[in-house]
Length: 376
Image (cartoon, rainbow, N blue to C red):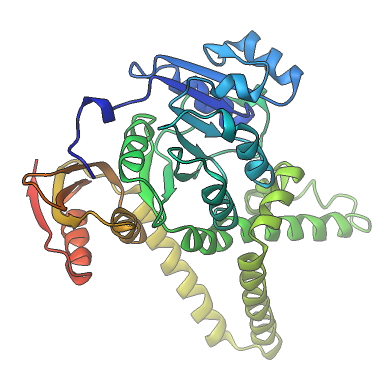
């Protein structure tokens, strides 16, 4: 770790590989960042590159991936998750020393292991996953503001370079995103529960209704808001979601089997006519959903700083940022200074809200760190 200086701020030339909804929207937003001098984009398909050129997505549209990353100090991989490792291997030999590479994939564990193993010396990978998107896809749907107010998860490991993590954190916050951290395995377990399995359940519900339509011709006509809300995500790109499901299938299968147990239990409750158990199910779900809404909509105005000493050792930043991310607290900014010569630095985390800051400090204290909180 080293003291923060001007050379650790910002990125001059940024490449976005893949210009669908996610990559195209990212490129549009990055072009508005005054600290980014140039955004160059590339897509595998010539027609998509032509559309990027026509729409002005990117300051430059490259003809190949190697040309896109040449001279870049930050590279975003915005390709389908099943193609992520292949895409990285295709550009690895063209990356300059010091380049930071990140991605937008929604499954991390297998990909992270593969990319870290393949990364050339001096090239730094930091996994990322923005929790945003749409059932729409393609460059035609790309727009500014897609990343605003979303949670953007970074997935550092013991091998993650501290300065690269810190440098990437800043421009992501400038997108308007709320940046948190999780280790790759915890990320994939969480995504199976809150994202991947819901997509598959939406698929099953839509499939069930479609089969019943054969005998009830007006079934879709009378479908109300609840059904439409629950099946909206079934309209998502099949190819994209096949990739996601294959990448995270181990944890998805675990959650599906758990859900299956819940379906069996619910069927038994209804079959037995047990109103009390059914009421308990409804009340628990209602309470949990209310808690989810409160957390998602909480508005906090004050900025606090949590300071703690950290040793200069592999995984130190990963452990701390992952612990904070597990609390569901956003780190608005992160910095490291060395007040004295030696192997210990001072890590400063900027957190919105005193309660959040005290919660973070308490968690870090429980992990053995001496954390202090001060209002900025």
